[in-house]
Length: 251
Image (cartoon, rainbow, N blue to C red; front, top):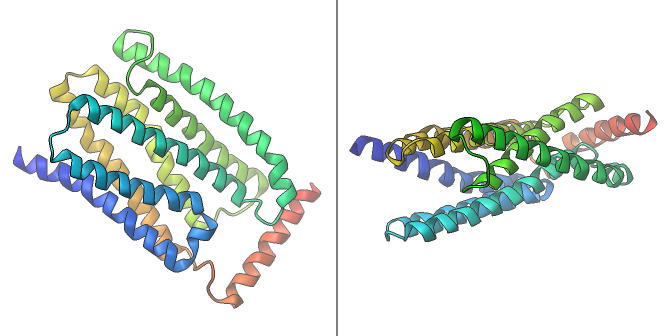
């Protein structure tokens, strides 16, 4: 049991510590200017971890801890919606007018996936728990499922435009895809099990998050070029991107 406790502690501490490392890498490469919402998400998650880590060892009230956890998850999900919009608009960076005209489309798509995810999570809970109705984290799980649909739409959007997804954008999207696609299932399974067994699902949940953070670190540290680096490499990239957007506008 003590070994499992150390594993749990590692899976909790390690990925959140790496979030600070990714933020530093983004600052050094100027990526925080291209992805400010994702940078804010990293900072928010790290500060939230520091708060809960300190509070955890003071034996907080389970009710207060759960309420604070729900607020933290709500803040994380709100930032994720902003990140998905940021990724979606990154494909149209040079075309300001086209980017503005596509904003209502993303809002309608978000509403559609939100309604669809509410039905999906409701049916999933009914099959596992045998009951209908709201319960703890029901809304959060629905929002996660909606974000999973938006991530799939982003991949289809890049494919439709024939644009190459930048490495860091690909890493961010894959990471959030893993998180949002697995969390509703894991939360539903945890709710269907007794409390002494449901905690075992924390290990795969934290392990998946750890893998996502490693994805972000790899693509930020190894694959992505500095945003404000050598002008000899930056200018051709802008020319190529501008030419691609020009082709899209003419379609």
